[in-house]
Each structure stands twice: as C-alpha cells, then as structure tokens.
Amino acid sequence: MFRNSYFYRKLHSLLGVIPVGFFLIEHLLTNYKAYKGGHVAFLENVHWLHDLPLMLALEIFGIWLPLLYHAVYGLYVAYTARNNVSNYGYFRNQMFFLQRVTGVITFLFVAWHFFETRFQITLGNVAQDAIGTQMHAIASNPVNFVLYCIGIVSAVFHFSNGMWSFLVSWGITVGPRAQRVSTYVWIGVFIVMSIMFIMSLSAFVDPQFQTVPKMAQG
Image (cartoon, rainbow, N blue to C red):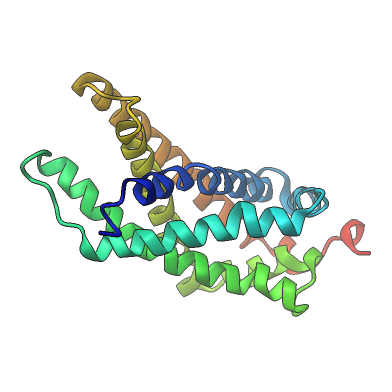
C-alpha cells in the first residue's frame, strides 16, 4: 500500500529533482573548482556556500531531510518492485533494475562520504579550511579512489535515469519519440557529469591539496 500511494510516489519523484538533483549539480560545480582552479578556488567556493544565510537550516530542510526521505522510500521500492515486461521492453527494464541497484549504492556512498567530510567538520575533527586536505587523503588511497568512482558513477546514473523517469511520470515526455530523445539527452548528461566528477576527484590527488593554502588560513 505504501509503495502504491500516488502521493508518496510523486513526492519521492519530485524530491529526486528538487532539491536532491540540484544538490548533486551544486556538488559537481563545487568539486570541479578543484580541477579548474586548484585548492584556493575550491576553498573559496566552499566558504561562499557555508557563508550563505541560514546555511544550517538550508542543509537540514533543503538537503538532508529530502535526501533521507528519497533514500528510505527508494530503498523500499528497490526491495519490493518488480520489472514490468508487459509495459516496457528489455532496455527499459534493465534501466529500471540498474536504477534500483545504483540507488542502494548511492545511498551507501553518500552516507560514507558525508561521514568522512561534512560530519567530521561538524564534530570539529576536520576544519572547514582543511576539507580539501581531507579529500586529498581520501582520493590518494587507491581503494578509496576506486570506491569513490563507483559511488560517483552510480549517483550520476541514478540521477540521469531518474530524470528520464521523472519526465515520463509527470507527463512531460509522453510519446515514444519524446522518450527516445530524452534517453539520448540523459545518456549525454550521464557521460558528461561522470567525467567531470572523476576529473574533480583526480584533482584532489594533486600534492597541492596536502596542506591548507595560507590565504585560506584564518
């Protein structure tokens, strides 16, 4: 009954785009600063975000609570849903299966990443200015790097494929042609975002992230 509720399904779908999807894109743009501008540019962007008014409230009510609902309901769907071969072909059913698998991987990855970064800042174990150094320590470990790449690709796939489903379920792409074009568009988005995220992760391996820049120390 819970899974079939129209309201819960629509809320889950909407929160996957607003604000969770926006958060993923923001995270991409912030981390990409590490690749394009180095440690200083990355920290400047981090400071800009943390200096926003009511940042804690924005994080709690605009990111973490919506993300928690989307994750918990999504996990419920992942373990109860079945492929629909009567309404969809092999490709779409495979995408639906991968959506469930990447949802679980993304949930575990985000929880791990949050614990290693934002939560450590909250506990006072890592200074805000040292977040780049923390990411260097994570990315420099070959095992962590591979696991992060898996988590990143899973998260981006889950977002991109989820956007395809969102457009269908909200009546935006209703015909076969529109859905086919949407498939190509979101495959492109998946490829571009995955490359940008992995380039950003690779940037943190650079030795410049071993120490906090003097201009960022306070």
